[in-house]
Image (cartoon, one colour):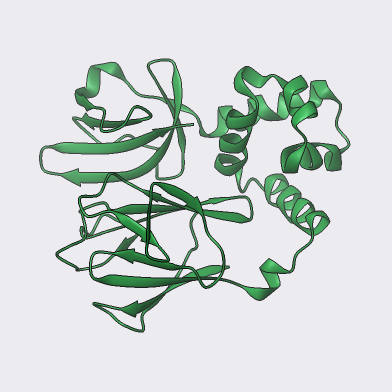
Length: 234
């Protein structure tokens, strides 16, 4: 398990375990990790876990996100990296046991998670990135963790295609057009969609379909006027 430690700023010494595949950090309470720093944006940055790697991404914040004093848009994290947001410094640390895991161990553990019904959103997100429209031939050529996981099941290409479709069916939902009040596009690959009400069965980390494209749900904010979903194309 990875964690963040507040090295400088509000809540110095606080330790936050990264339990979710997507951790949003910001000033508002709807974030996974709330930091009361006036120089931090409402939803400032995202830490995304993709299988056993972690990525830091700026969410179009006002003052920027910094890794080891260098401003970033998206970057892979390593142990002891220092994340600067506003007046706050966070130290990222992976569990030493996790860092020492070999590929065979990672594949075995991920396979167990999938068999137990856990990790569908993560697998689908990876699959969509590498395998658009369930093109498993491309996956076979690209190699990587997905290929090894599929092989660890002992499945043929047809069975692998079936797995992909099942994963999509378990987590992918369509946004009902009739409930949409407003759509904004802060970035070319992101959408902020305001709905009249919160959708049942859709949480942060889920995959949803909007306007023919698949999106990862970054965060959800509810208020008296409706519900706002922040999505990132995957």
